Length: 393
Ligand code: GLT
Ligand code: MN
Ligand code: MN
Image (cartoon, rainbow, N blue to C red; front, top):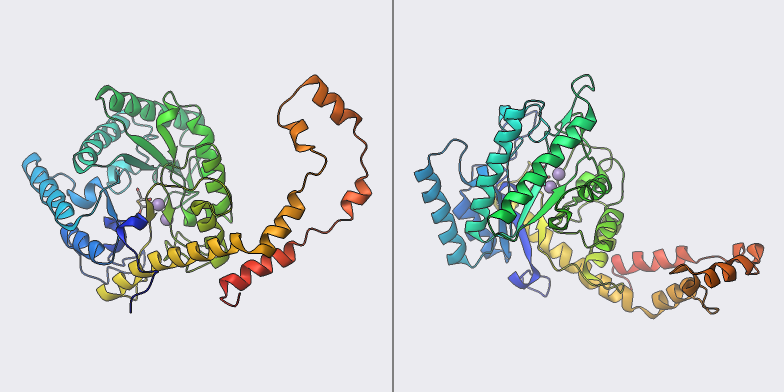
C-alpha cells in the first residue's frame, strides 16, 4: 500500500546509524538482532524514503582503527551515500562509551582526558566535513557525576565551556562553517548530568565565546523523562533561532530513556510539536533535518526495524497534515481570535518602553472582575484538536 504519507527525501527525515542499527541490547540482556553494516543501513534508509543518515565517529570507524583503515571505511561509506542519494547532515562524537570517559569528557577532572576529548572531536568534525555534514551534535552523556564530593560543578561548567570555546575557535580557524548543536539529558547513564535540560543549554550557550555557532538539539525523550514539555523546549529554542537540530522520539514520563518510535507515546504532545515545527500556527517553520533518535522495540527482527523507521516518518507526516487542517479549522481560528483580541490596542503599549506608554499603562482603568469572569473555551479548543487527531473531524 502506498499513500500520501509515504516519506520521500523532500521530507528531510534522517536516522542515525545507531538508531536503525540498534541491536536491541539492554542492561539486562544482550543483543537480539544481528549487526547491519553502515553501507547496508544506507541502502535500507534510501529504500524507505529517508533523506539522510547521521553518525557518531565510532558508529562508522571502530575505536583505535588505523589511519588507512579509517580512510577506506569513510570512502566506502561516502560512496554508498552517493550511490543511494543519501545526505549526511549531522555528525557527532562518541564521548561516552570508552572507559576513558567514565568521569566525563569535557568535564573530566583529568585535564589529559579533556584534551583527548577535544582531539577526538577534531577528528570527528573532519570526518563529518568529508561526508558533507554541516551540523555537529554534542551529547554529553558522561558529563556528570554520582557524588558532589567528586568536583565542584562550577569547575565542570567552566571546563565544558573551555572545550567548546576551543573547538569553535579551531573550527573557525580551519575556515569551516559548522554549527554545534548541544543536546541535554537529565540523567542516565550518570546519576546527574550537567546542563540537564534544553533550557539550561540555552543559557549556557549565551556564555560561550562563539555563541552564534552554537544552538540546541532537543530530544523528546530527554525533556519528557523528568516530565518537562518538549513543545516548550523547542519553542523557546526557536524563539531565539537556536533550534539547530532535533531528536524526535517518544517517551513515558519518569522512565529510563526509552527512545521509542516517534508519536508512539503522548500523541497530543507529538501533534503540537509537529504543528510548531511545521509553522502551521503562524510562525516560520523549522527547515533543518528531522532526525529520529530512536530504535525499534527489542521484540523486533530486522523487518520490524524497517517497520519502525517507516512508522516514525509516516506518523510525522500524518501529524503534519492534521496540524494544517487544525489551524485552518474556522472554529479554531474563531476561538483563538477571541482570546487574542485587542480591540483597544493595548498590546502596542507594552512592546516597547516609553514615558508615554508607561503613563498610559499607569493611568489605565481596569475592571479585573469583568476580565476574570470570561471563560477561555480551552476545553472546546482542545476537544477540537482531539477530534482532528482521532479522525472524526
Ligand atoms: C546516544 C544518546 C542520544 C544522542 C546520541 C548522539 S548518542 O544514543 O542516547 O540521545 O542523541 O550522541
Ligand atoms: Mn538524542
Ligand atoms: Mn534518548
